[in-house]
Length: 180
Image (cartoon, rainbow, N blue to C red; front, side, top):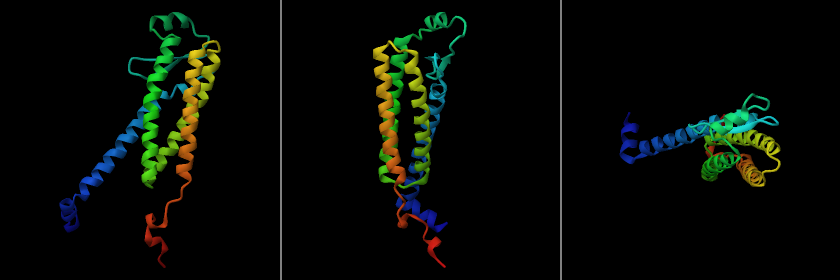
């Protein structure tokens, strides 16, 4: 009780609350991107990608009836796909950079777990984006955009792999584990 009162006077409680709030925001943002991009990872050959008004991607499965008419009606053409990918992945890359920067300065295991989840999400996205490239073989502008996104994801995976391989210094581990 006395420690809590003293920590409030020193501002320690505020700092812990800020760190908790920051991590919660990062986790919420991950959950948002994971839900938004879920369908990209599940694309199959010939599937078309579209985005609804809330920003979540969905698929038009190859062989469905009236796909072209539905894509025209909902304004989900190739140029819109390009714009949506550009807009969403620009924001996503900023988020990935933010996570990498945090991992430069902290050994917090929560952020390391978040980094592993993001690496798995990047793997899934890369698989779906390679499939999407096959759907539009003649669209040079869209293929260049997809390649750019894939290269950025590869850079992220390399960087996050380096950050996750760093072992936690002994001073950060619990000292009690070394007692007899």
